[in-house]
Length: 186
Image (cartoon, rainbow, N blue to C red):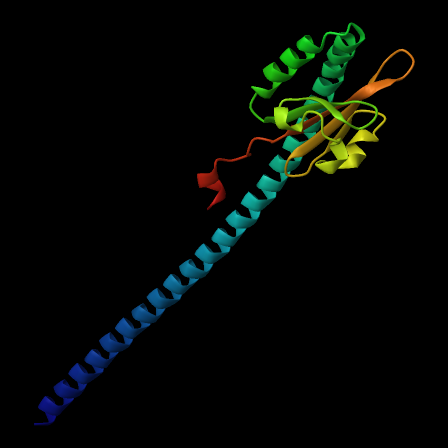
């Protein structure tokens, strides 16, 4: 009987060691899974931070590029408008406006006389109105090509003749989105 008790004690000790080993393995697995979940959260946060940083850099670069291109385009467009105004060719100016407004992003182009009245516009309803009644008056006060990066870019440039200011050219431009809407939603 003593042998039986000794064998039973060895089996019980063996079973408790196996149980202890299994519990140890379960604890190690739980710790491993916990670490992996923690690391996943950290990596997700880092990815979001990097994406936000990248979007900021891209937006700044797009703004710089848009500003340079639009200001240069506005300078050359003013020269064409000036030439047509000096030759009294309003039909040519109208043709320029209609061609320009077909380009993606150009919302409206206006020619304002020195008195502040809209003489030509791609939106015919605005022709003949006082510019300041519908648009910001500071656009008419600029002495050089002006660019404002609001949601709708505002550009204005004086049209100068040989002796005086002939008017002001104003353009409203909607920049293209940096990323498609489906990617911005993420």
